[in-house]
Length: 181
Image (cartoon, rainbow, N blue to C red; front, side, top):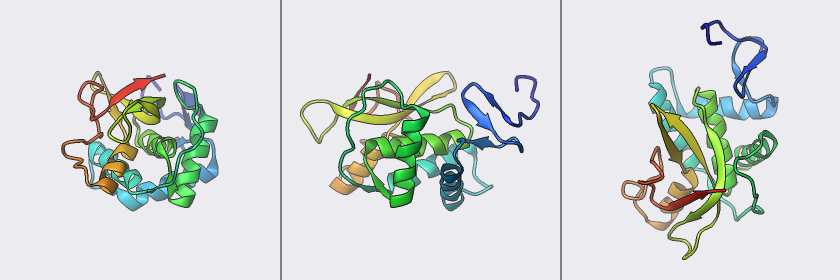
């Protein structure tokens, strides 16, 4: 809470907390996937920023599996994000919406005020912008975007993530043109 007290069985902004004061998605299956993923890629010696990058790399390593139907919203609803995240966590494969939803939940579990954004993105795979999903996180007064699926595409196509990376970049410095709905 604002006073610093541990919040149990309640919500703060749009974060939910269980009876022990831990963040929960409200879906036990999804919570299990999130905990399993973070246990696989982070440890207690890491800083929050290092954990965020490790979670991003974990999601980036999933397989790409075609495209889901386009969704026409500004941000994913909890129902949409949960379904997309559970699909990629359970199968190890997905599209941009799945990648974004998975990273969204990992970032939120790490304490970041993440948003799963939907819009259009113009990148090297097409001459025009196509429907796409990514994550926004405000950090130190600036809004950054995170797109693990773009970096997954880069890895599969020999494009450098050092020069075309999409981890914690601004809209102005991103490797593609992102246009939120």
